[in-house]
Length: 353
Image 1 (cartoon, helix red, strand yellow):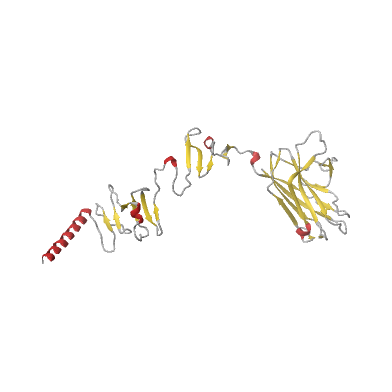
Image 2: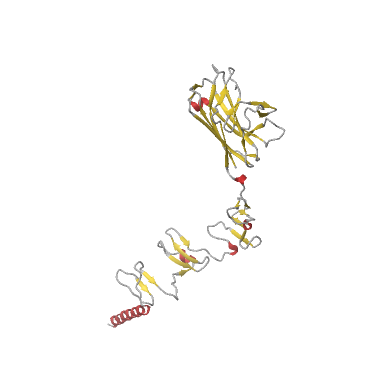
C-alpha cells in the first residue's frame, strides 16, 4: 500500500513540475503543430517542429570530444554536434562520414586551410594601399609586380604578364584585300608541261608583267601596270592569308598527272627613291596556298566553281608603307595533250594585327 501511495505522489509531483516549467517558458504546442519556446507567447512557425526565439540567449547542441563524436553508434544523417577539442567546431553527419561545418579561423599568415592548396596572399604598401605582391598557390608563384601601378579604362589594359599597357593602332586586327577586279587571271601551260608565266594579283587588276631579277621579283618597268600592290597602313604582323579563285574558263578537263597552281603572298619594303619605275618584291614566309585541281575539281573544272585556300598561324612583321601583292604559278606534272589556259577571278585577304 505504501508503495502505491509513494508512486502516486511521485507521478503527481512530476506532472506539476512539467506544468510549472511549461508555464515559466511560455511554451505552446498543439496536436499536429510544432513547439514554441519563447517569452512572448508566440506560436511556433508552421514550418518548424521546434521554434526557439530569444534576443539574449542562444541554443546549445550536444558538446563532446572528438572520440565521443566518432563513437556515436549509427548516427542519423544530419546529426549535429559541437566538438570541444581540436579542431573545435560544429560537425554534421552526411550519411557516410562527419564533416566540419567551418574551418578554424585562427590560421596564421592569411592561409586558407582545408581543401585549398594553402594559397598565401601577401599585401604590400610599396605599390599602393591594397597592392598584391605575390600569390603563392601550392608550388606555383604568381608575381604580378605592377598590378598596383595602373587601372583599367578605355585607353589602358592589363597584359598577361602583369604590365599595364595602352592599345596602339598596330595591335588592332585588320584585313588587307587584293582582287583581280574585272581582269581575268590567265594561267597557261606549254607543251612541255612547264608553267608559261607567273601571274600577279594586285588592287583591282591581274596580269603577267613580271620578270625575275637577282632573286627578287620586279614589276615590269614598262609602267603597264603601275602601283597595283596594296599598301600596308601601319606597322604590324601578317597572321593569315586567304585565297579565292573562281573559274571563268568553260569546262576544262584535267588529264592524267597533277595540275596545281600556287598562290604566294609577296611584299616589298618601303619604296626607295632610286627604284623609279620598278619595285622589288619578296615572298612572305609560309604565306602560300597550293590547290590540286584534280582533287579540288574532281578532274573537271566547271565555269563558276570557286576554289579556296587559307593559311593561318603566320607571324611575319611588316613596317608601315610596305606593299603586298600575290604571285600565282600554274604547273602540271606531265605534258598535257594540248595547251591549257585556266582563267578566273581572284579575291584574297591578308589578316594582320
